[in-house]
Image (cartoon, rainbow, N blue to C red; front, side, top):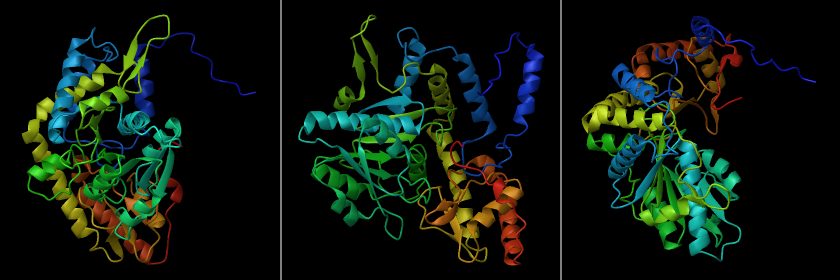
Length: 421
């Protein structure tokens, strides 16, 4: 029988608590030093970071389950979702703040399922068709919601194989999803084509813009071409976009947005059959942190459109340099044609697992390479990584050069993971 650590009998002095926590933190990756290229922490600059922290602390006790008790949080959420709908080019619409991209996708699919129950009663075995590149959150949500998922192999350029997708559709298909951009390769699925197919067959279409939703609008304003993905595209019924990625809000905060306010009746959970009376929530969570909502509002209000455009251009320049300099390293190439700031790179001559191990040995938290194609994913570029980009590229060149000698001293156990394990 496992013996668990007993609950502490006495409390610690405050100074002792901070000592233990500071000691534990020593093993964390140095994200502020840029040693976490592309994952987990999405950093703009120290001022934005400070504003988010102060706002979070000011409202740490608030609970968005009780907006009547906390009208401040109601104000902040209302304004954040209005700003989001404006950025996503919604003519009308409605949106909610969730805990993250996974919950946003969950709520979008839950809404789609309930919509299908009301508008397509002939469906008895609801199904979703997505490209193999779509984020696992689609399958995670589908498992809870009882939806069958059909994933189809992408084209050679990593975009959705439209013909294969059409072949997978049947009278039980209620959802089609597309990524803007894909989390691994960084290309956009053909949102206009996919949404048109969905519209013609009375199928719900969801754009997963968890990565790009709060970057694409500002990149486009800066004059860079971005494929169509938002509510300007006819047939797009819902969008997921993370505030804690390129919105630079503290975790966890994301947006799930709908093209028509009428869809909200399929979104909410409305329950009365218990002793307390009516209970209504628009997201999966009951209690929601009001602090996350307030911090998102503070960061967005601090930066404004002008501030986001400036950061978007800085991140874009990091992207341009990587796209230029990685393929200049003998044997390396960038996968596909990334259209925003997510990208992956592979090698024609070396095992990418060895490259990842070499980078990890040099202090870069490098996650396990993707399998198909074999590649190192740079994920979501942050400005902290941009500050040490020269060092990263130099280390990458050294690792490749060393591996080409045929000697591989790098320990693969140093490679990190994407997700818990």
